[in-house]
Image (tube, rainbow, N blue to C red; front, side, top):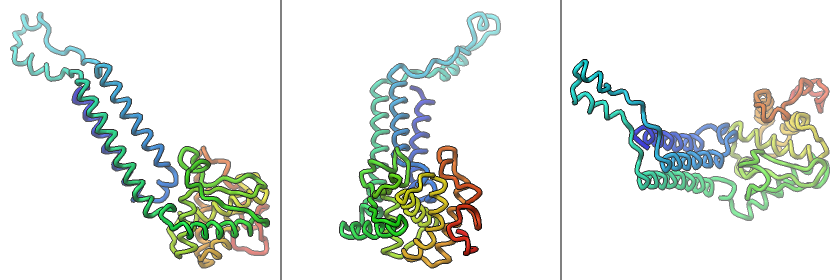
Length: 292
């Protein structure tokens, strides 16, 4: 692999570092929409692809654009010109250099994984003391039971066996069941609100909506769009019980309702219908003209 390949590797790594920093420090929408594990898997795949390409002998040689022998004889090209044109030829990269470059790429990915893990361990759900997590889960379960109108339980999926990462879902619940599972990120945002009085804008609103949404599934509502509409309405009172003012809770739920219309093709089933409005068929309190 010649100079072009080396530059490609460099730009891929620079892009990876920039993206991970943006994922950590940037808007919450980026963290919500792009599982960081997928990013690292893509980066690893690119590194392997570059390595395989180098070990197979590098990129194809460029066409010979040097003057041919008949041109030299007819037009008198000098040898120095021929040597300059030789620089356009790309030679295959030695195998040892390709392997060293691959090892360096793995080191970059490992370092970025370590940074994400380090920050999560000190700022995320796993950084909270065990007793506090137990108390938080009990609080979330009590709130879910109130919406579901029966005793139910909430679990935070720390191992990510059911939600988040590859599954790319904020929560999951069996319709009519007694257990809902939330991502650690949703649990952490709910904890920060209920136990520390801290809000993070749309992330807090999303966490409230997810807890209410899964609670409606436990109550028996199977349709995703309907459950989302009911969740945004229940989220106002839920947000107040967790520490928000009524105005703030309502504002966050209205923001979630506005963002619902922007859902992409992969989550269209969560999009609410035109009946999710004041006075519509899905309005839970038609005597109240505030919606949600």
